[in-house]
Image: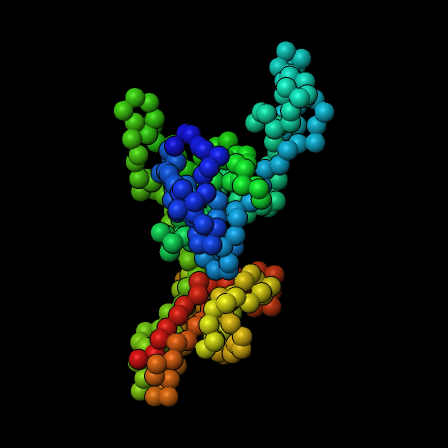
Length: 275
């Protein structure tokens, strides 16, 4: 996909800023391009927010250097900065600042989306708070993946990602059975290897709670289960007793690895209705 419209992300694309944006196209490296709205957290939790670019206008008074600091010879200088050629008129007027926004230098991120619950690399159509398309618009100066040559030129068409592409393995949890009257296995997968994992649960919903690790998809009050230790494969299990009085109750759960540390990470949330 090589074009864009300043209307991308507006209602004509089925995008209402309340739900996650739909896929609006595919990049030539096989990765999806979404409208401007995504989940606040890359693991699919938190509210839907506008994805902010990590590019910004450079603080320059002339076009004698490139964003990486390269000094240009005089015959390579860009035009003077004026009303005819204001800052922002050229790609070289922008610089990338890591973690300035949600997205990386490719104008995307590895994340969970409605179409990819296991995660994918996704580009986003960036726009500012006023709804105006914002650099780099769709895809950054470079593609995240390998540009398939069959996707370009005369007769080019979309190809899927190559078999060598690495899948995103989410940190998730699940219950082996959700019926009353016995024990069930509460399982963790995709956690960091050999780390402490705590599971929190709520019976009140998943409105969102701010934590040091991001927004947890739980509502207060919240209770904690005993800690578990993940193995070398990032897996852990715990036996839980599902008593008859829980029949018909919906339980909302989410785990955190390395609780209390700067490397703590939330899992994908889980919702189970006991039968």
